[in-house]
Length: 534
Image 1 (tube, rainbow, N blue to C red):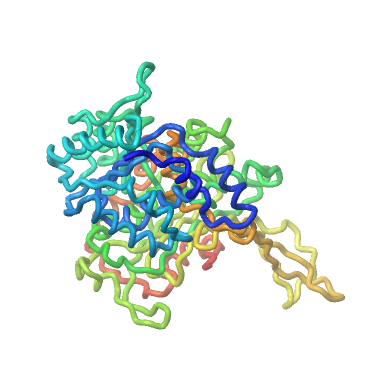
Image 2: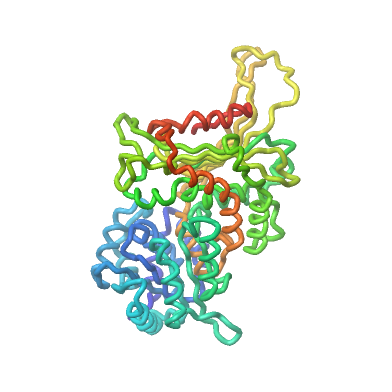
C-alpha cells in the first residue's frame, strides 16, 4: 500500500479544521509548514478503549484534514479485544462520524485516512504480540514509508505501563537516534504517572531503562489547550502585564476545575485515585506553574520546563499538623442536577457503600519566592458541581485610597482577570467604570476576549496539538521526570494524612449540584476572600 499521493493531499488540504472562506487557503498553507518532515508509525497500546475512539483517532483525523500528518504515516492499534483491520476501521469510522471533536466529517478524506489504520489482537504482557508488532512495523516501513520511526502511546491502565515498556526494549522495538542513524522511537505515557512519590520514581526508573529522558513524553492534555498555552503568550508578549504580575499588585490567585458529571463508569478507577491524584498532581499544578513561572530565557522546551520546575520547588511544604487551615476534602451525596435527581458517590457503580474517597478537594498553597511571597494560590476541583468549567482567576489588590463618595448604586470591587480554559476559551478583565448620568457612580464592566469570536474558529483540540508536537519531537508541553516527582512531593503529606483516615465519617458533606462543602468556603472567607463561582 502506497502513502497518500498528491491528489490525496489536495483533498485533505481542502478541509482544514473549522476554517472557511478566504481564511481556508491561508490556514492550509500555514498548516502545511507545520507538517512533520520525518515519517513515523504510531502504535496505540489499548487501542480498543475509549481514549482511542473519543480522542486519539478524532485528533489524527483532524490533523489529516489540515494536511498535518507526515507524508509517510500509519497507525497500529494493539489490544486484547478481538478485531482485525477492517473491524477496527469500521469501529473508528462510527466514532469519528459522531465525535464532538470533529467539526465536519468528509467521506473523501476518511477514505484516504482509513487505509492508514491497522490492528493487532495481542496481550500487553506476552511476547507473541510484540513479535507480531515487530513484523507489522516492518510492513509499515515498506507499505507506508514510515522510515523506521516509532511513536508509542500507552492508552492503557497504568498497571500495564511497565510491561509494555519492558517488552518494547526486550524485543528490539526501540531504536535510539544517533550520529549515524536518524531513526527514532518515542513513547507517550498517559496519566496518572504513579500513585504517589515512590511509585512515580519507580516508574521513571523503569522507563529510563529502555527510553532516554528526551524520548519520554508524559502527557497532560490540559497543556494542549489553546488557552493554557496562551498563558505564556498573554504574560510575556504584552508589556503591560509583566510589571504587575507579582505580589505588589496581585492579592491572590484561584484556580477552579469543576465538573458537573459524577464518576459515571469510572467508579473502580476513582476509588483508587480520588480528586487529588486525578486532578491536582497533574492538571492544576501545571496551571499553577504556568501562572507563577519566571520569564523563560527563550521559547524552547528546556527553558520553559526549567522555570516550571522552579515553581514546584518553591511551593512551601504542606504542614500535616495543620491541614484544616490549608486543605478541605469532600464527597458528593444525592442531589439535583438540571432539575433531575442524581445519586451520591457512594451509590455509584463500583464504589464502596462506606467509601472515604474524596470527589472534591480545595487547597491553599504558598509560593516562597521573590515574586509570590504572601500571595495565596487557592485550588479546587470537584465532581457534581453546578457547571463544568476550568478557569484561573487573578484578583488584584483593592485601590489604596477610596475617594469616591460611595452609595448603594456603586459597585467598587477589585479588578479580576479571568482566564477561561473551558468551555468558552478566552480571557476577560473586570474593571470599574462610571455609570452614565450626572453623578459619579461606579459600576463593574467586563472586557472580554473569546477565541471563537475573535478568530472565527474553534481552537484545535488538546490531543491534536500534543500528538503533533510529539511527532515533531518537541517536549515543551509534556512533563519532565523531575517536575512529576516534585508535584507528588508537594502532595505527599496530604495524601499520607488523608489515607491514614480512610474511615472518615463526615462523608457525604455536599449535595450534588452545589459548589462543594461549606469548609471550602470557610477556607477563603477566613482570609477575607471568596470563590468566584462561574
